[in-house]
Structure formats: structure tokens, C-alpha cells
Length: 182
Ligand SMILES: [Fe+2]
Ligand SMILES: [Fe+2]
Image 1 (cartoon, helix red, strand yellow):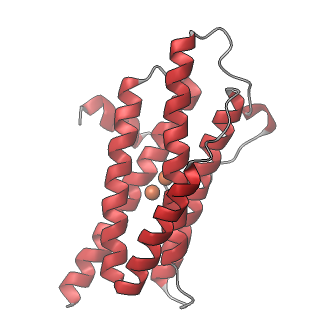
Image 2 (cartoon, rainbow, N blue to C red):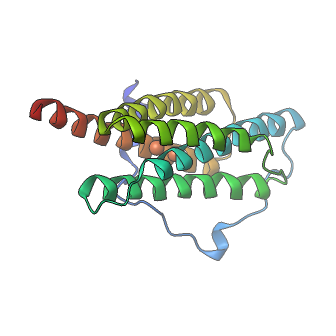
């Protein structure tokens, strides 16, 4: 990763799970943009929106009823993913697009990953999280690189990508501690 990219990532406070939004933060976007650029943005936002639904659903089904620190962390991650999901849904409508119905298939994929990993073990939960989040970070990087986003949307994508890095680091740390304790 280039130093500039690292610096941009460091600019985001990932301890903020759900950044505040005010009325004036909502804007109608895309006026005057080239159709080809808009088409790319639509595709990018639909991909991100769908991925985030999968992420929310994975965490949802990994949480158990047990009163423990691990569940607390999973709940925070779920909330963070719900924020990402909201972010991209808002951006879709601001650009005049609509969410894709096909995303419901990704709900099901998320359910399968989440539910099965919970049935298997805590380590399976952690490994699933690390694997899926790593894929997400790659997707984010590709979309940030390839597309000509408006500055505000780009910032949202960068913050969310920084959050996914945070998730990977958190799950890796817990997995390491679990492995040591074995
Ligand atoms: Fe996310
Ligand atoms: Fe994440």
C-alpha cells in the first residue's frame, strides 16, 4: 500500500461506529456528470450495498445469547456494517438509483456463512470474519482505484474501508489470543 493511501486511511477514526449525519449532509448528486461515469458509480454503489448486506447478516447470525465480551464485539461490528449498508443505500438514492433486488441472494449467503460458522466454533466465526473482511477490503480498494467518485462519496468509502481493516485486526488479535490459550 502506498504511503499516501496509508495516510488517508489513518485520517479516519474507526472508534466511531456510527458517524453523525445532519439534514444538510443529504444531497441530490450526479447532476452534470457524464452518463458513463454515472453508470460506473451505480455499479460500484450496488456492489458495495450488496456486500454490506451480506456483512450485516453474517454478524447477525454469529451472535449468540451469551453475555460475553465476544458477543459485545460482534454486536458492535454488526452495527458498524448496518451503518455502511445505510451509507450506500443513501448514496444510491441521492444519485437517483435504486437498490438491487438481487442483493437478497447475498442476504442468504450471509446467513449461511454466519449461521454455519456459529455452529462450528468461535474460531470458525473469527476465520470467517477475517476472510470475508479481507475480500471486502480488496473490493473497496478496486472500486476506489477504478472509479471517479465525487469527493464526499469517496470519503464515505474510505471510512468504511478503514472500518473493515479495523474488523480484520480485531478478529486477528482475538484469534491469536485464542490460539495461545489452547
Ligand atoms: Fe462494511
Ligand atoms: Fe466489516
